[in-house]
Length: 101
Picture (cartoon, rainbow, N blue to C red):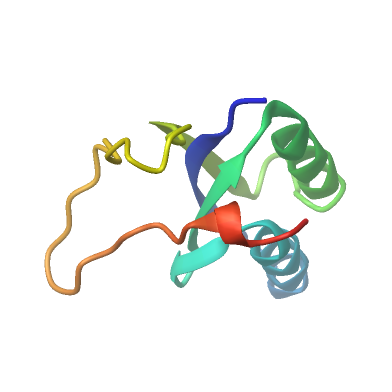
């Protein structure tokens, strides 16, 4: 099953909902900045996360963005081709092949 790099950013109006959204996203991703996370997702993983978030988010007050950064390399020798640039400290996604889910 192919996986994709996703950048997830949120803007939540209520502090109680922020904590719930933060917990759900942090369980699935690595924090890049305060409300910005990076993760590698299969379609199933993403559906599960969105369903969990759907139960928390207020439809007219909150916003969560899912930015697709492209496929995860199938081969360790294949270079990462993410369209990400930065200023200051460099950012590189963590290799999740070593983790067991």
